[in-house]
Image (cartoon, one colour):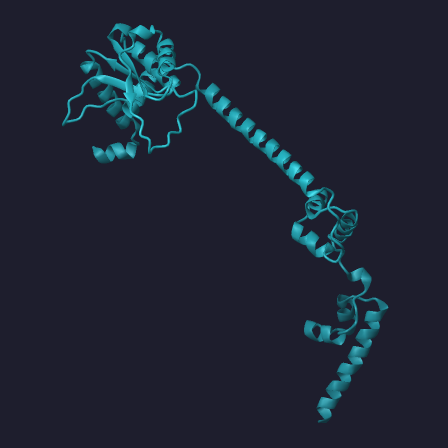
Length: 291
């Protein structure tokens, strides 16, 4: 009992000394060295309840931001504007100014909607400009095609869109149909590279019966560089009243069908070239496995 009382008295004596030193403005490190107490738990118990001296407190880097945020909020700024001004998170701003009254809106609902719509217009214009620039850069990067490049492009295009020979239906001839004017231009240029003369081509329009048929015939004839009288009889697609057609604008001109006579040998060359492209695209590891 006497030993416990002695220890308690020693602790109280040390506490009085530690508190006195703390009130003089000493740091925990200084008190530790002065009293030779190297147990941190005991050291903290000795000065419990005594505030640390101001000079030992680390400055809070956000104190200035907090004060600025509160001032801006009093000026009527929204969280978004304060975030732009100070560069801090919206969650921090909310914590700092939540006791301040919400500012009155600067705009009526109609004005706010108009501003929002104007912002959307600017955003869409910016995105459209970005899209156009990406396409322009990609277009300019291609440059002029060599004959070999044009040949390979044409073979790939034909194999994607042209008629193909089947084991159950022999059709070794070039027959191509498409509604895209630029695709037709490329195909005609490819046929020219292959030495196909215009005399060997048979062209006709395929279009819905409810469309502008004469206008479509004039358009495709002009694009192909032939008189409309050189076109074969137009194929009309019957209109199904239960189907809702979306291609009803003025730009709808149906498709142009291009058939090349006496083209069996040419078709075989195209098919062979296509499989050559397929083999040429395989990686070295794939080639080794197949060998």
